[in-house]
Image (cartoon, rainbow, N blue to C red; front, side):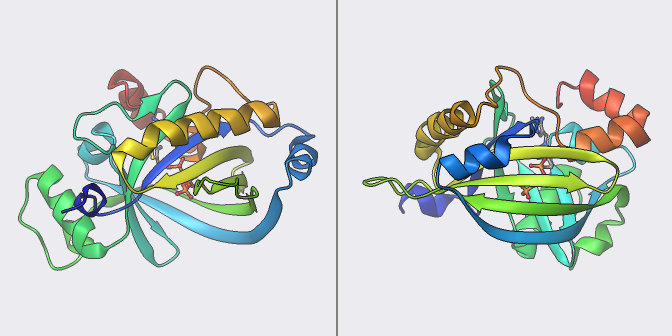
Length: 214
Ligand code: V4E
């Protein structure tokens, strides 16, 4: 079996940034193209004891599709400096298995049957840019500029890879692009969910800080 076939989903290597006024100009200088403008609602789910998020597992419904993000290796720190790496599962079957394992319950027929609660729900307007492909490299870099409906804006530089051994190169590429965009920081920038919780669910936010998840 090849290493890539061990993984049920891609690994998302990304770095969030605070979008300044000249970020689009800098994207233009790098030859980035606006490839998508989309609006979507994300609703995030957890059990009453917050077992998923306290274990750094992020289950969401984006419009009508379920997605689960979790660290690539169990217990592994998903952060690397200001960058993060998370596995993204989109198959409902894979998500059912992973969530039932984490909750310690038998695998139900559908995700709704877990009886989880929504702890955050918001709409994002996203502008997605793609950077030109570099010769002799198959690394595709996208940059998202997001505005959430609770008055929060964030950008992210993102590369998707299939295997753990590709992560190091992807991290270097993400850092290089952040530097070129003038948004590089040594420490992580808070994303939409964390900010939503900080504003609306202080208790959940505090527990995540105490568990060193955010
Ligand atoms: C909070 C969180 C996760 C869920 C949200 O993932 P995020 O990439 O912020 O959302 P979004 O809308 O940009 O998803 P995309 O469209 O790119 O799939 S996944 C991991 N975390 C925790 C976390 C953390 N500990 N540190 C940082 C800097 N970010 C997130």
